[in-house]
Image (cartoon, rainbow, N blue to C red; front, side, top):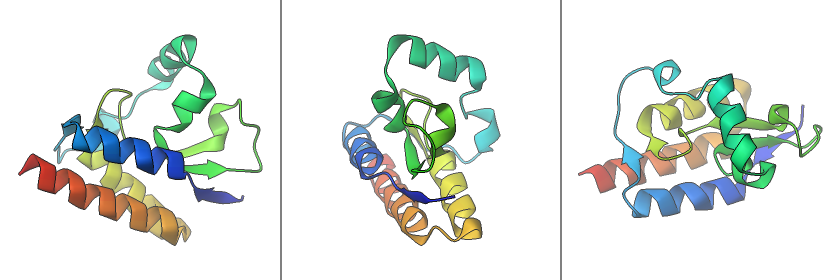
Length: 116
């Protein structure tokens, strides 16, 4: 699997944080992570380029027009979730994707600073 950092997603997350579109939650990401129905509803209205902006990683061995290409989600298609960033950081560390881990960590710090 060739997963790389999705720089467009990092830029998107930074803008959302700057705009205050954040949830400083400390629960379990599984409670906020969009399920398959939410993903499909988003894709009914948006293209995969927009979908990709909500994922810090991309598996470049997969087709661009499949959900399986996009890894490490961090939001609910409206806001950046702190627990989503924490989950992405943890999973990236476990899987050895240090650039994704570092990006998630930096975004988490920006979110916490914005949240005050």
